[in-house]
Image (cartoon, rainbow, N blue to C red):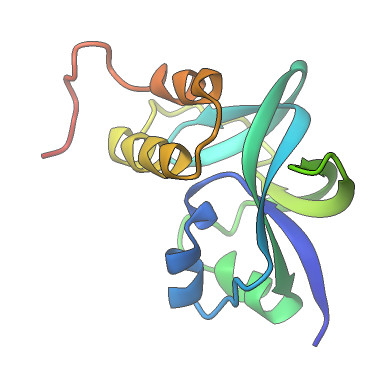
Length: 146
């Protein structure tokens, strides 16, 4: 089976979600991607920004699984890019990540952002990164889905 390392930075960091979509997650590792900033609209994407970094998970995924994941509604516009991520042991690995070719112009999806924040906290990403995600939430809590 042809697999490649894929860097996920959105809700696909949730191994339970990936497994529910038929993606094996036995080789899942947290990783850091330098030179990219997380942007949240209706969903998440990455944009190049030298002074930023994004955290996520690195998973070995088959070509068939990738095709299925990114064929779902709302995900067809994501395109693969080559990135180099750093693992906890400071080793670097070339990987693929999927980004939107156009920056999302929609207001941040509060439910998505809250789920992403909870997942990033569960994965023990740095507090500074959690603050980056939190900045997409309404400051007064308005707009929260109940």
